[in-house]
Image (cartoon, rainbow, N blue to C red; front, side, top):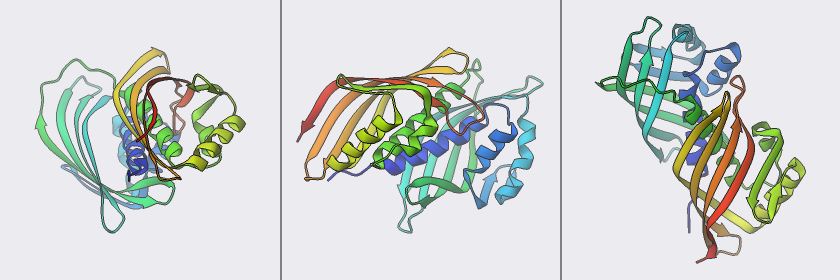
Length: 278
């Protein structure tokens, strides 16, 4: 029997939100969104020291004003512990350019722990950052569009894999004029229709898992991105049958930086391998 990737999508949603938070100016709304990722008793440990409690976290955010920051994620490993908490090991390249032009590029590793919340996004319980080495700085490349788009993608997949029978949670991540072309016969452009489709899926599928690959994010214009991604999908039906498929998605994303998530304007899905019962 297959295992749902719902928890992994939930974790990656929060991780990509965390890192892209640093890559644009921290307005009051964006600080509030960042704080909402944390447990009240969060403990953060870095080479610069320790911060205990999220009330103490936001004080240091003003120092990022005027900086250019990019995080290039190399690897994420998610492990669920026996007590229900989740540990996450991350390796990434950090590239920061100070207001005075000082240019730093380093490899970081993180050891994070999350608390699970049933059917909701998990919260950071602890964050430990280690500097693994200093790298030669390349030409700065803005990573925000990619991280912002991936946070949205994984949250969408988390909601899909919850197999809920209504579309309430999707309203936050869809533009008013959204169009979801999920197959040649399934075009959805209203919350009501989306709710009907979700209910139909939930009545047929007991477990759903999406594995993304070949992710490309392109900036189309200011605050408008295109995401292209292939998915290997596995499902387990309510009648105990395994089903597989492969699809290619093209998304158009509209971003408003002060909101929790960017929004999906359109999704166009191409079937690479049709749904097959194994």
